Length: 449
Image (cartoon, rainbow, N blue to C red; front, side):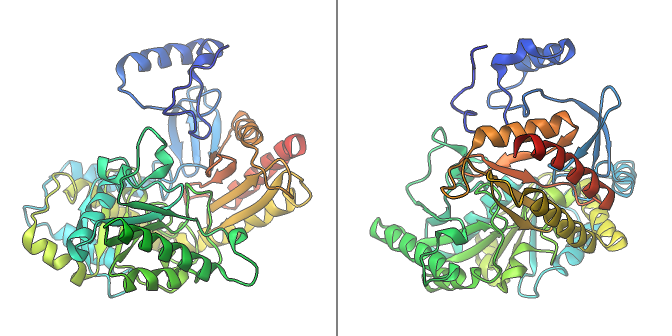
């Protein structure tokens, strides 16, 4: 069957090829054909054989035939699919009232105080939006107003969102979504790129210094460096902690601000703390959040140092019809309840450690696994053709991903060559889920790795 992949999705990891539609079961063919007729451009299905789910619980999804899939990929349902406490809180609020931030809402203030209490005291102002894209758009807008600069620095394969502004500094979107002339790229913090005798902190400092210099040569003053503390799209690089301090020093020396994009790495995803930046001993100027905040309800946030956002607030009106409205706020508050009642961070830390240890044991003798890396419940397994050359093997990575899917365990891929397995389950992932995952992965590795 001839592939019909468009340029827009050719690089997208683990994507479904519509050219093989006729090979799928009839009910899937029919639904996908209907989908293609009514949905707008740019949508992508994943897996060689897409899957349809009708319910979920914890870290599990159930298909239309009642089969249980272990979800080790979706971070949107942060505290678990269909968590009863979150569902009840949302249903209760829907039955009462849904107003916006133009009206006094004690529940909104309560939520803001609770959320801000998880941050360093320097970060004490919260704006609420609906998506991570909106949050990053607002963050950069405020950064520009505060600094008077236009320049933005991101890592080489970063993803920060889909608005026109944010897409201009999201290189992973590819050639069809060009970068802005005010955007410069730096390496992700891969320790293997460090020259002998140097350190990762110095390597990253030089990268940022060079980017700032090039921006200035082209007439752009630095506004912000924005990084995802898990470097999710770059291939998942979380360690070693501490290198970020040198980077932030360089940014501040140039008059810019540091924006920590915690959409992926926040809410205890990395295990050791609530926020990924905390692992590095830095306090950002701005922090953005998204997907996990409402366990699937559209709520996102931007947290500021007051001195960074006050002048913007005096001169620019900000209002978001749904950002900060009663129902998403109820979901956000319920998520914080679950974190407190279930000790989610400790669960992430323990099960993440067990998961990575098990993966390293399974792959330690494989010539096709360069590295198992990550923190908490964010894990990358880099698949290569040869451990010595580190040449990426996307095809083998996709074989592993789809073999796992065929055994009803969901993962995906990431990285500049889409050859790193992305393992990022809901934080409800427990010890039994770890065992099931490792047993399934061992079966696949025996055949593939």
